[in-house]
Length: 324
Image (spheres, rainbow, N blue to C red):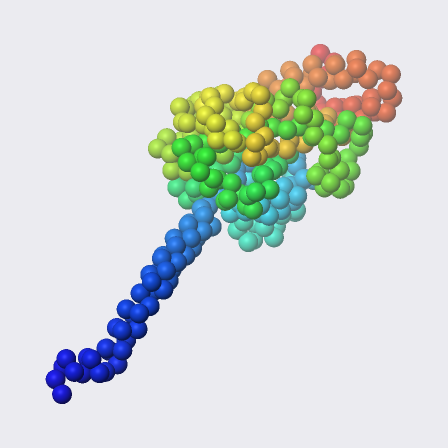
């Protein structure tokens, strides 16, 4: 028997006849398999993008665990905290030790630093981590990023095609206030303060989420903690191009995301926040603001004994002479 007869009569011949008879079916299988591989590859790529959150912390242990748990839940890979408490002040490990041990949270010692520590923290965080993360967010402990329900995770949001050309995404604030409450409540912030103030003029403020691996540190030459002065293309949450060097975006754009900002939780907490000072100012310059703020508070609440007690309880702990 020659080779031709063998191929005609044998299993190989039958195999090729089977292929020929089912050619259309096999083409469809190959096309579907190819599309499936592309789909899997794209989703693996989405899942693999890494996102970091940088924040500076001072006297915020009451809110810190809620903050960490929230950003873990929506998909952040890492939180890097710059501890700016006083040297004998709060210990972050008391409330988030488990997250530190799991390496989800990393802490850098900025304790006792007085001269615009937020500027230095943001520059350092970007410089040290931008090669390891695809995106880095720069938020405060009282700010919670809310993404549209069509995105399951922060990865889905940042992978949206509308941000392909964006080097930074600037998310508008939406202030949440609780003007009627006088004292701190042990409930989570998001549980006790549920109503936004869409009319607040402060909503035009933005905070930034920035691409990693930019050739120059994004925060070089920064003038405020909201936005860099460097000329990198910036987008709002709708993907629209906006000014790269402005801390504002007006009118606020809440198309795909908003940054819920719990600035006024109660009268007591509001005073503690104002007394604590701002991390983008020097201590001496903020002392002048404290004195002015104290006099305004006394004047505004002169007939409210309960509020006056809260004011004096907070401000009289200091060695600053607020009567100057």
